[in-house]
Image (tube, rainbow, N blue to C red; front, side):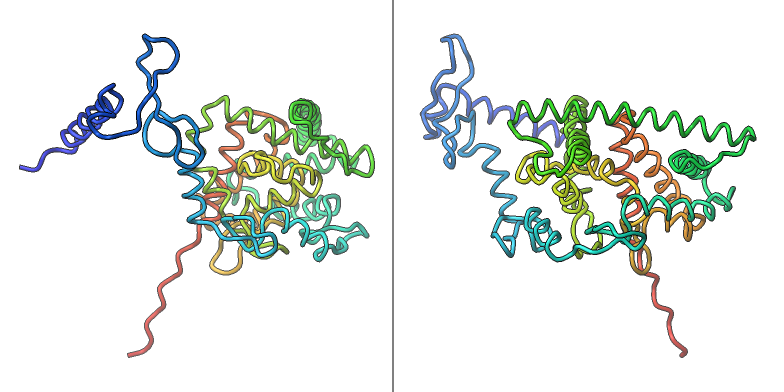
Amino acid sequence: MRPSPDNRFMTHAKRLALVLLVALSPFASTAFGAPKARALGSSDSALVYADGCASCGKKIYFGERCLTCIAKETKADHSRPCEVCDKAILFGSLCTRCTYDKATSELAHKCLGCENTIYLGTTCASCTAGRLERSLGVLVAKGEQLTPLAKEELDRLLAGLQEKAKNPVELSEGGKARANLAAEDAKATGLAFAKYASAAADYAKKSGRAIGETAADLELKQRAATIVGAAVETARVLEATKRRVATRSFQALGKIPVHTELGWTSLSGLAQYKLLEVAPEMAGTALAEDPAAVLAALVVADHMYVMMDLNLVATEGEPISIMEFLALRGTQSPTRALAAATALVSIRRIRAGEELSKSIRDLSRAIEVLAEPIPEKPATSGAK
């Protein structure tokens, strides 16, 4: 009779425990010819360590190499060199810094709505807000065809745009409610941005990096501090809430392919570019390589771009933006419509600093659902 999975697991666990006990015993070096171990600290300490990692010399407790060197080798096995600087990368043909340099030198173009110079998308942030306001009318008119969550969030977006443009709000109860929502959202966002700027200042003090040092004016310097601070605060919050459990899912999220003027690149690569666009001094930092942190920075840098111009929703043809999906496909897939609405809610909450850990996780899950390729329909057989 074949043993049950539970019995096999217990047997394996017992064997592993025995191996570890033997390996860590004072007689391990004699019995197995392993490197001689030395005691740690006081004489009554039971811990021992080997001579050191064979690659970097770091003190380790077992094996021949430390986990860091093993991870580096694994990454190297799956990486490729950047076409310009030969730095190891996992996605695309250029590293983040070279992508940024290439974009700023080759991709500069005028916004379709004004004379501002932009690098990604079709319109600048201000003109994108106008595009969103026009398209919201179509979406809100769909009413009950959208999920209640999507309808509520679109109402909030419309209220915020009306407040920002100082347009007259109707004196109906609904108009007053929307105006109150807009005022609350604006206040929450202002407080969150101040908190993000404070986090950036702390990071600059500890790291010695001058955030926004290349900014031409105070407004751009403050924007850089806000965006970098969003990344810093996201990393801090997720670390405090057992980030390690979600590390793999965030890494998978960062590899989601998106199509932009940069060509096909990863979501993390795009977010890194947007971060370096305002804070080039962050190039090469661990923070700029953090998928969750740069995703939050991308949202804070240009949430309109994320909603309107970032084509990350998979379709049978070319990918489309979140707002375009809601307008054209929102009634066709309840699951994806809910994911799109969740993405909108999460974007607003990240900008407002609300439940940052939950919001960034919800956004990552929503993007994974939206970016999941749609299976191709089987070809219909021809006439017999």
